[in-house]
Image 1 (tube, helix red, strand yellow):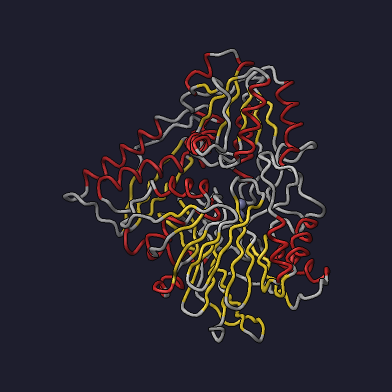
Image 2 (cartoon, protein in one colour; image 1 turned 45 degrees about the horizontal axis):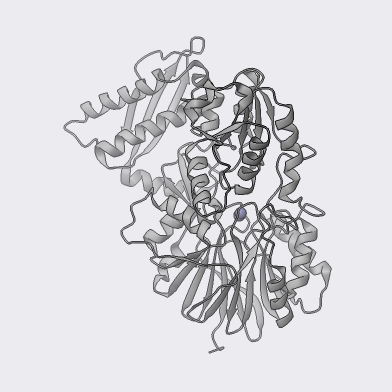
Length: 557
Ligand SMILES: [Zn+2]
Ligand SMILES: [Zn+2]
């Protein structure tokens, strides 16, 4: 049996940020760990989702046995619906992770019923030649696991995303004992999270956020609006607890914040004090010092609840002078522009906006710093090491770190990029060839010349469904439309008659979107383009069932 080679193939997530996916192959059996998306840059308007190219897995479809998920962050589960529509295999994950996957699956119509199999930490499942144990780790999301995969050639440990939080707010500790047990018995290969390999020391515990939040709650005289990732259940719990202590009721605003909070509550992961919740429509009716708002949209996503509030176009919530707005999250590189634009809008309305790094912190990282990475390396003591989850510089720092530790047994570290194959057999490990990888841009997209793969995908997209341009001329002084918007299409024949009725209606859609937007939104082209694209897309899909590339063009005249 051991004449077979073991292959470890990062399909995405190495040398790039996001869309994590790793395939492990022994003989004719492949298991896949995670199926993530990449956060599309907010300026890349029109891109709904970027995910790894699945060519290799599709070509080897009959060998793929399962998809294993480490945790519920989008860079690990965001592409699951697309994965399952091509490759029909059972999906293993913890309850919370699978609940988030289900929520994503609801947005898509899969032909086959997905097979979601819940697992618990310490549970072992057998899939082909692999025995897989799930090991609880601490991270910024609850119910995160590492995987210990026993193969005929030895044990592979995949940490997933982690930090070593000695005082997690839910008291669920990192199961370092199990990790150490594997280390004692001998580990062939360690794959470990490299995100913060350039940060010395230890990442602060989630508890470190409390003092700053407490200070905000004790000082604020008017409304408090807190934005964080909806999956940060620890953070949501903290806000609920503080609101309770300081006599404020809490409204949960935004689709993802609402549904994730509900999921966590139903799984017993979130404790919601009785009577604390407030409907969003009741917020403005209560005295400002009696409410807090939990809202989604920390990254300045144009259609998110917080972005709408920032430009005063939210149905229920608005920000007034003296309100405190807290962005309890990190600024994902690439999102600075839309985030700062959103903050500007809120600052203009007189809000005190707290964001970025502060001491004590508003936000702590969910990823291990150098000392925690050392701890894991020392406990696992692998024969081979492959840093994962990071850009090349982070992977290479992590590899150096391992080499500096010089624990007995480490033969070699492999700094891999997505697509490279690490081959392991009884003689050792080595890089051996490549599989096709790349980025696939889902739905519609604009062209970013840095990413050539996208250009190719876009061209394919164009050749199949065509392109629709919406050209809007706006008067730079009044912010009003100078004329009826122009709709131009190529390679996209409107379904009905000569298409003139379709075009006239499309013009109407754009005009309505423009007229339905307030002055502040109209000055923010990012917001306007995204709104127009979304509304046009809805109309075109409904009328024609086709998905052309939609590009709004705004001309200032
Ligand atoms: Zn991640
Ligand atoms: Zn994560």
